[in-house]
Image 1 (spheres, one colour):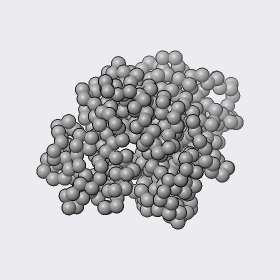
Image 2 (cartoon, rainbow, N blue to C red):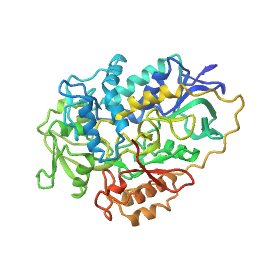
Image 3 (cartoon, helix red, strand yellow):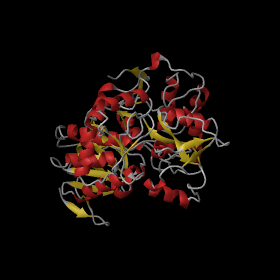
Image 4 (cartoon, rainbow, N blue to C red):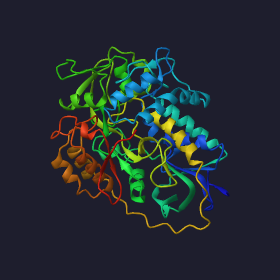
Length: 476
């Protein structure tokens, strides 16, 4: 394939010869997948922003892996399944926890330097969270992977170019259409991240609005569990700054307005988030912990005018992580041939109804690699491809839409509010409301005040397919 330099000095495609693997997304899942595939294939990475500034770089939590002497993948799996509240797919959990130590070794071999001590976070029964630079794990890992991708001779990168739609030929994905051109590919891997920025209060950057999930649904792939958005308990009030769960793992306490402790700081995130939400805000007391372990985070707090050595920090929950997404098998295959998904945009069922802390970057590594290797088995493209269909018009994410989602599909929701969202002028908002209406119970990250108890009839995944009624499926 011919190359030409871009204005930033990197290479981009100069012809329409297909890539073996087209990776859409520049976070950890996409970058690691690209590196795993590049030894046997020509890979093109498409990123709507700079590769060195992905959403993954904001991840403060570490990477969970049973690497301690007192730990094992079986124990890691038990904690993951318990947090998932009966919805975690056992085979996916076994893959995630069983492969975790090997993926940590991969990162070490690639040049990521991890801290010496293992951390403890909510829901974990052992110290098994691997950190790099305290609360800078996402940035350290994403930056190193991006550097390796940009240097790799078999990986091309197109930065600042946004996918508008998937390109299909009958019932097969044959690439994507960007705002500039069609890009054909033998296999396409979506690693486009989640949709938590649809909510008014979020820890995510503005672009994390689920574009890849919506594009996959429009093209004919199934999506599932969109009602299961995880709210992080401790974001700085009036800010998107996340105060990592690792702080609570090291002994930070949550206090009410009277300075009294009111919850178990290491309970699952849905429990802690609702406890704080019931009070409006809470105070995170960092005075007694070793703050020097988190220099970047302490610096950010100082920039915001707080002195964590002197005064507890006001925190409140914020939309943080999309548990559901595009339905895949354990090799990242979607229900549309030629299309794969990995990372936060995918729904393998591994997290169940509530993600265990620090399993997210791990998911990117384990299932990004699995998807990349599976995608290399796709057959070649036809000699002639149809012109791509016109892309759907953009659906702006307005302040009004974000406020409506926070009001009607926040930490606590009910049927009346969800019904209102079915009229929203935004596809993914409507699909999220549809999933939440089907789940007439409260489980994990999904809490309905009109159905406040778990119901065994809903120990299933809510699956949506274009043109069909929602269905409940059990995934094993």
